Image (cartoon, rainbow, N blue to C red; front, side, top):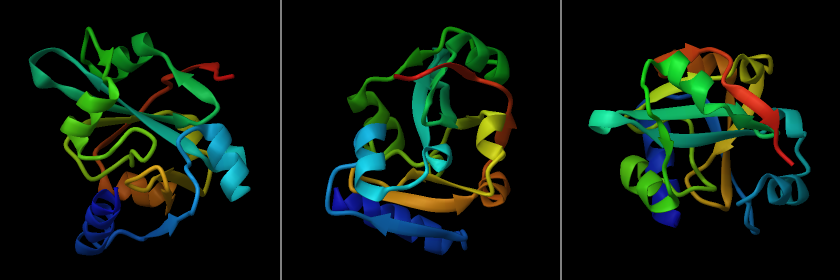
Length: 158
């Protein structure tokens, strides 16, 4: 998965994105793993999930790690109906990044961010593999993406 990390670091450099790529020795696949390995504050950790709709439309949903995505809210925010969460293979094929290392940028998708994410000065998003994260300011995310900001969070995850 080093190739995906290198691809993301290259994308960050080529697009003059102000972000820091962080690599760890242990897997960050789950939120629990991320907390254990990094010691970071849960409130700064995000997750990005990839959904597919009719006619090949792709929607990336970014929420704080402790929340789930409400599909009905995501459909309303994105304007894309009948959204389905992709499986890990589909997500990889669509974005070029694995589940567990999915950044919120660097691929073609409608990005919908829950406003709870933007309450923080900076957040951690996937770094291209299960061993890495990207620390990025929320202002920078808004600068580099075409973002829809609307509540898409549902219940808290366990």
